[in-house]
Amino acid sequence: MPFFSHYLRRFYVALAELTWGAIAALSVGHLAMSWLLLAIVGESDFVSRPVDFVYYYIVTATTVGYGDLSPQTGAGRLVAAFFVLPGAIAIFTAVLGKLLAAVSNTWRGRMKGLGNFSDRADHDVVMGWHEATTRRLLSLIHRERLEGEAVTVLIAKDLEQNPSPETVDYVRVERLADPSGLERAGAVNARSIIVRGATDDETLAAALVASTTCRGAHVVAYFDFESSADILRQQNSRIESVTSLSSELMVRAARDPGTSVVANLLLSAGKEDTAFSVKMPDGAAPVSYDAALRHMRRRHAVTLVGINRHGNVDLNCEEGIEIRPGDVLYYIADRRLDPGRIDWDAFAKESA
Image (cartoon, rainbow, N blue to C red; front, side, top):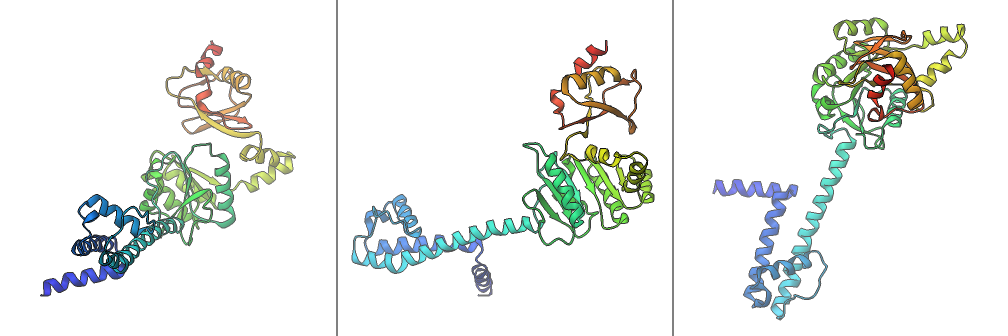
């Protein structure tokens, strides 16, 4: 008896919570009982054919009622009216409600940051939330996204729901330096990770965790103080540390009027004459800077302004300096070039 009572209690709890197991048991039980009662009252016309009976049961449950199959005896019609029809409709309604609730809960979960995007790749991840600043950042990233590129994922704390569901997906974490949050955001396969915590200490910890966990992604960290940025540069040179350039821009604008306008143009993808970069692929033949400058200007209508080799940036290169595979070229253009459209072999021919 205790054994039977235990399972009866479990079924009662499942039924009260309307679990899928309880719904399945009710569906099978009601289907079997409906078949048995119709068989007892002599509805052998379609009860003897399982496929026809299941068809009759489903069109009854969904209230479609095609009418091509129906009980022929008075007793059969009473069974259908007072047992089959109410029970089947109730079960069908429960199944439909459960499905809608599951879809709704999934969507609400994603909105509240409970989604899992671990299968995403070649996307951008933003860590940290600062109302106006982060909204602006996400807007700029979205503006630069090419057609077909994966959606950006935001990792943040203390946000009840996705602040910009039209342009980003959201992962909520208890702390920014949380490897599980990075995993759910698909950061392991991300193209870049931008980190800005509530404090420089939080940014430092989150950037180090991101760089260690996601070795294939380029990590950029913003700091309020230059001293904090220097500490990170010493700890991990692969992380690009950024601080505010407002003081430098004000000095340059005072001494060289219009410099702030130039800086704004170079950094904003929403305007023309923006600075972009492209990496010279492995296997490409080395080429002189002068030949690359002419080729980029003539073939792509862009202006080459410098190179980055092993972290050393030169924006005023000598004409004869050799550009090699792996070097990053910086150029000014109205829009980003498709690397696949650049004829790297033509560089070498012009250099010869």
